[in-house]
Amino acid sequence: MCYPVAGAATIARARISSADWRPAIQIWMDGVEAGWAVPLLLVGFVAVWQLFLSIAYYDGDLHPDVLETWTFGRSVAWGYSKHPPLMGWIARAWTSVFPLSNWSFELLALTNSAIAMWMVDLISRRFVSGDKRLIVLFLLMLQPTYQFHAQRFNANAVLLAVWPLATYCFLRSFETRQLGWAVATGAMAALAMLGKYYSLFLIASFAFAAVLHPQRRAYFRSQAPWASVIAGLGALGPHLHWLATTGATPCVYALTTHAGKPFGTAFLDALLFVPGVAMVLALPAVAWALIAGERLKRFASDFRTLNPGLWLLFLVGVGTMAFPPIIAIALRADLQPIWALQGTFLIAILTVCGASYSIERLHSVNLAVATVGIALFAALIVAPLHAFYRNSYPLHEGRNFYRPAAEELTRLWHAQSDAALPAVGGDDDLALALAFYSPDHPFYENRFVNPHMKRRPESAVLERGWAALCFGEDAGCIASIEEAAGRAPRFVRSEFAVQSTLLGQPGASQRFTAIIVPPLQAAPRAAVTSPGTHASADR
Image 1 (cartoon, one colour):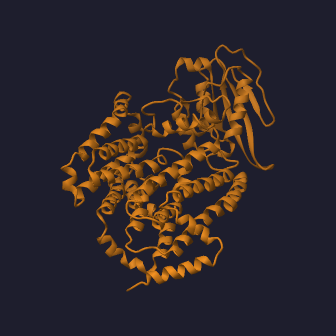
Image 2: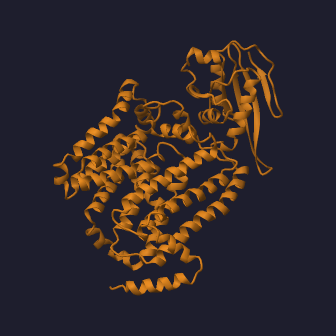
Image 3: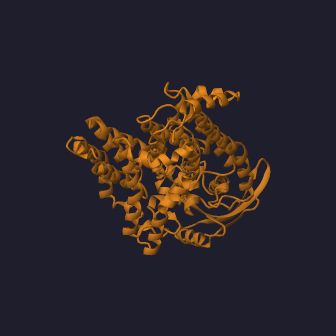
């Protein structure tokens, strides 16, 4: 079947000129190769979704994963108890410039997404130009990955930018076999591992793609693969030494938490892994189907004629989707589709860049309008509705109450001591929130976190005192922190309630139980209460 491409383009231009606002979009799209259209798109993406997050979570604080990321970053180390160090390093660097606030961490999350899409565009421009580069980015923006998944800046989200950067370096190394790109590949692969050990699947996919690619002989006879290995091990060396000398606690945590599941559970997770990822791609897939139309019939022929670079990326994509289920079954580990979202950019690149046909400007403009329209609808309509809804039906982590609860506990602490609150525990999420939102910014002490109270902290921590917070209905947490506090000469138990409000409208309330162990040298004081607070000096 033949397609009158020139005629379609003429019709498209005629339709575009019929709307006053569409010529402005055309001018912007014409600036792709000039170098300013993509940065403008990414800045707009950050601005609109920052507005969404600020409104939607106006009365909701940061997710515990984000608070944990900041907590790890308070100390500079080659690793942390649960995760490798990259996310903590980035959070520490960010907060050396930006304040400790909800909006700054939301901006960090979206900046990370924008950098990720910039890295994807570096790959796309190797194969296509003009509108197709924008279409790749639009398809990514139609996923929930770069707004909602990215919002939780943690060990998963930090890979959004690192994986495409490592893939770009590997592509360039395979194509050119130059020493510089080979070293960059090893360094970026190491950086990905410092983000999350799940990145081992990306590195394995690089090897898998190189071995199966038709140009493998030229690649493996060059210095490139060996230079990558040496550079990667060199960059990862300090972290490997840290693992060897500290008991490999992140590995132990990962295996303890995720491995050793019943075989049926592991098999079901592996079976649903790829369909779970596909669900995230549903909206972009529909958008592309509408653009391609009858030309979808060319998919098989386009696949057979993929150029060598795209074929390499296809093999990498196969590896990142196939290896995790295989290993999960072997280790009887759980496997969540959310862990693979940083690799879905490969599907967008292969879909658009692998298409042998050009895309009419009409379709590009319509996709741009749809993408921007969805974002604006979310920011201006959905976000306020979400905020009002959550005021009465709070987020299940208790995020609506983190800041006021932290401020109240700090007030109760200072009723017992003039010193800054040094350490906090209790419910894990609440302890992280206390560290972040308390004006004293105490340190999160995991030996005071339920149910780990039996691991005795250092004597210096006990001498300075500590506080812990539990949800009022969490009897197990309360009993645990009371048991730990019972080892101190004196402690104070307080109960108080916090109510959320939005623009003066009262919302849901939550009760908390606090345990305060004052410093050993502090003189006993009467328990201080406030409306809705019950306090008792137990010792």
